[in-house]
Image (cartoon, rainbow, N blue to C red; front, side, top):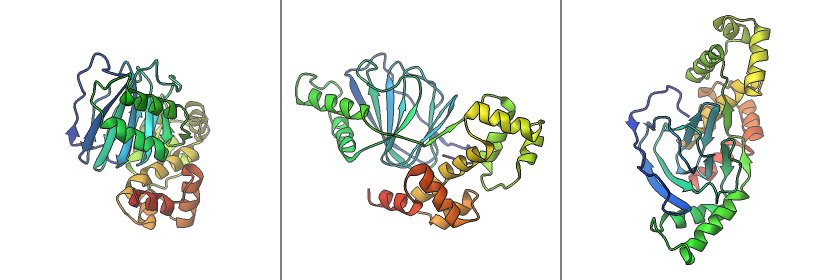
Length: 266
């Protein structure tokens, strides 16, 4: 989840009017700072991070996928995909009729070891694999397994109010900023009470909860780069390492050390 908003490498989209098969996989190795302009598809997209951290941005929020997680993007949802560091990814394009998950919102999915191996195996198939043979059955098993994957909480809902959007952009640029709510209310030309009420109404989170989730999601890139837990915590605005570890585990289900060990062991 890049902090400075600067991206150097614009990626191109594959030119497709239809999918060759119900599951089509595109393999990509991305340099640091890659991005693609906002766009949408007529099919489901599942962006899976083999390595690196993917940041998918939609009008309704940001969705982050560290290695071994993936982002489910329903048909028609406009989105852009950004990587702050080098990343290896697999983009799965799925026939909406064959994909058995909600179509009304994006989701971050925790990829099981079985599904990880299925994704890699299907990625090695020819684009027009035999739908009635072993290759087609392998793709069908992958679709079945995707439908049962648990959803993770790696999302950051974004407000529609332009004043709140400006506050969110400023917080993203300086996650270690410790100004109180009164400072941001003054920036948005509203009272503290109004800012707090609007934040809750438009994001479902309090201002404090939103800023904490932003900081934790920004910490993922630092941990993936091999930075120490202390450095990652300080860079994303935590003065207390123990508070950072506790908050990280509440949101992601693992301590920062466990998360980093899993990355290094991939």
